[in-house]
Length: 520
Image (cartoon, rainbow, N blue to C red):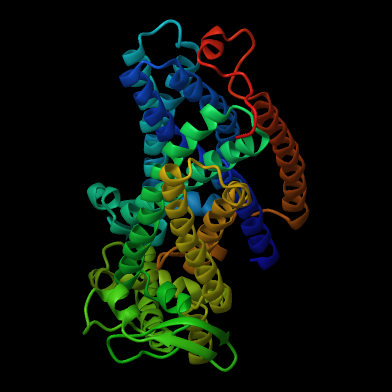
């Protein structure tokens, strides 16, 4: 096992995933904003809303194409860079990905073409239905992807089969209705809605500052302010729900986010700011708010949230239990009729993944000494300082979006978006949702380490048998390719924004008064 190969494989997947996720949130949010804008057009029959919908639809299309292109790469990486992972858990993990491709992706991919080329071939209501199907397909794609990822965070509905030496589905409904997956889905799509609303606000503010397309800009900002405020509130509320699910399913992640080294008496306090010290296993200069963490994590004043040191002791116990299960599997390989081995396996099978943590240090987990087991138990603690600071920065941005869209909602009626300071703020806000979303993704994935599948398969066992030069070659190749695609994406988006909402010879837009207007 070459840890350099493992870390480089993780780096490659992180780079491709984070790049792909630059496009996903905007696609999720713009799809439903198009539905809202086109619904207003169908209800009012005012041509201005047709032009608005077509303009934002063009930007949606550019973003959609790049999202699809970069997402396909990630599908193949499971086979090229994470072959043993694909073998070990492919029976469960592959099903949501296959359903996403067969059901959601083909729905949105087919309807996108009809949406763009059907404006003059379909009635208003028919075209609105197509736009709605695109939005549903886009969000259903996210649902199935997050069901797969949610299973990696909380592997329910599956068990290890000693006959095949891999994980297999035992209850697909449990995989489908995994509480972690459901919480991740609603939280993620809400963040995408905030991203799209901020993008629409920023581009529209640019038009107002330039004195161009002011009727389009103001109407777009009115939709974005209401949509964004509801979404920003949802992100915080649903983020709280995600924290609640961690209490039952990912206790170590929750403890690391809070840098909670020791178990506190219920209800636990939340640390607003502080400086985690891994070596001393304490948090310096901590400013705490009493009771809040207990309320978030347990919805009660009596529920207890375990600290890191307590959870490490539990991991130590599970490693010992897992070694018994591992030994039983090895005996079953020799004699499948060994009833004693089967009985031992059934008793301890839930912990066999913890025994695999020892393979980082010894080839046979049964030969590990107590010091090695203790070391492996501490491996279950993710990077506490990174978790601690990323969460607080992300949460701070979340509350900032609520304040921003609250101001936007007020400005929609009070000043009709005529305040230049607010318009400049709207432009400044454009990249911040992407920062918060990428931080959230990093938080979720680092918080799961050292597991590829929590409690089931350590990350270092999931990688393919590759060499360091091979992985560096693909990293440089993807960087060059994705860098080129990024330049193309940005140039196309900027060109479309500069051109504005009116296409050449667009008589409908001219009749609606969509020539550039002076600054107001």
